[in-house]
Amino acid sequence: MIRGRVGRIEWHYFTAAAIEGYVVHRDGPQTGAGRWSVAATVVLSDRFKLAQRPLTFVAPMATRTWRWPIEQFTLHEGGRFEATLGPPGEQQHVPFRAT
Amino acid sequence: MSRFVRPETTTLHISQGDTLIVKRRLTAGEHRDMLVRGSVMGEDEKLHVNPAQIGLAAMTAFLVDWSFVDDRGQHVEIRGLSIADLEACLRALDPDDFEEVKTAIEAHENAMTAERDQEKKHQAGASGSVSTSPSLVGAV
View (cartoon, rainbow over the protein chains, first blue to last red):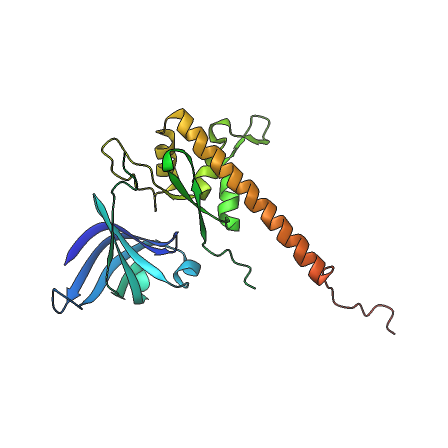
């Protein structure tokens, strides 16, 4: 389980929604295929961009950023957001070039 | 063909092997926001160019990501930053590097404007003038 405060939902480079508080779960085996899901609170959203595909759930950390493709989601009244996610990708904040 | 801006990016190559990832085109909203940031209300109640935003408004509008690193060699993450945070990051650059980024993005903006103008000319040539519904005046 991963808990965090600040996240966002992206459509390409656009921010489709800003998230304040999220919990990512992984069910099933810890190696190989598992099912990922997220429950979050959306504080700002753009309906047009949320209707586009593909959407990505982004969780920035101190030295890396996790990115999960959103497979299906529901945005409830009051901003409660629930989604099933594909396997994550990780972008480390490392040099693009030798310095 | 869709009238919405597709979220496409272009990679600009600058000195020292660095790269800038920029939006190919701005949406109407991004364009208007850029114009608002670049202007300031004068005492004469007219809009004037905001000198503090010269170049900066376009930079924050177009820039998506870059390869820039800090003193520890860590990639400085700008993707997803607010305009205010991105501005702060750009203001922290060395003045010469700021100017290089500004020049590269302005050249990209000009190239995209020229490309769009060419497309409009091509479309106008292909479809002729804007069609209007026939008037019924004089039909009786």
